[in-house]
Length: 77
Length: 159
Image (tube, rainbow over all chains, first blue to last red; front, side, top):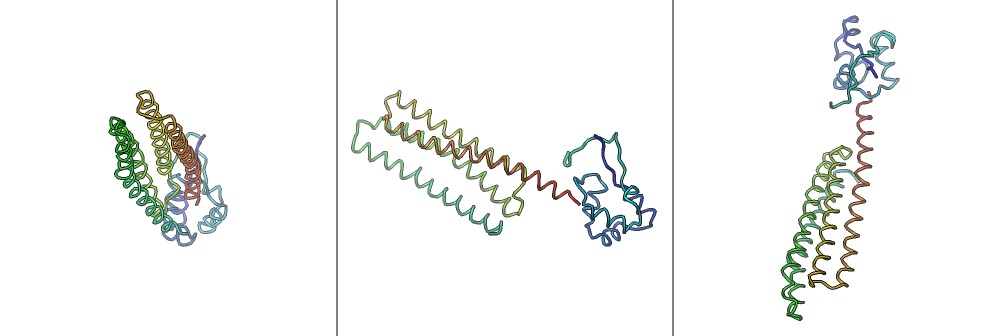
C-alpha cells in the first residue's frame, strides 16, 4: 500500500503564504502541520481539510496526492 | 479523580505495601517461625530454609512494586495509555507467575524433605492461586492498555 502525500509546501509557495499564517488561519498548531507534511498523520478530519482548502483557496485534489511507491511506514519507525 | 490524584494514591498504596511487606517478611514471619521453634524445638532444622524461601519470594514482589511505581510516574505525567505501561503490566504478570511457581515448588520440595505439613501445603496453594490471579489480571490490563495506546496514537495523529 502506498501513501497519501499532503502537498502543503507547494500550495503555500503558490499562494505566497508562510506556514505560521496557515496555522493561524486554519487553527491547527505548527506541530500538526508538520505531522501532515511529514506523512505521519493517521487521519485527517474532513473539517480540517475544508479549512485548509479555504485558507489556501484550492481543491482537496490540489493538496492530496497518492504515491503508490512510497514505503509503508508506521509512525515511530 | 484526576490522573495526578490517582498517581498519588497509587504511590501511597505502593509505599504501604512496601512498608507492610517489610514488616511481614523481615519481622512477623521470622518471629512466627521462632515461636514455632520455641514450642517445638525438633523443627529448628526447618527454620532457616523456610525463612530463606519466604525471603526469596519477597524479591519478585518488590520488583513488581518498582515497576508499579513507574506506572504511577506515567499516570502523574498524564500519559497512561502508552505501550511502555502495557510492557510494565506484562512484567508484573511474569513476576507474579514466577513468584507463585517459586513458592509452590519450594513448598513441594520441603514436603519431600519432611520440612512441611500437608496442611501448610494446602494453604500454600491458596497463596499460589492469589499470585496466579494477580498475574492473569495484570496480563489482561496489559492487553487493554495496548489497545488504548493504539487508540491514543490514532487520536494524537488525527489532525
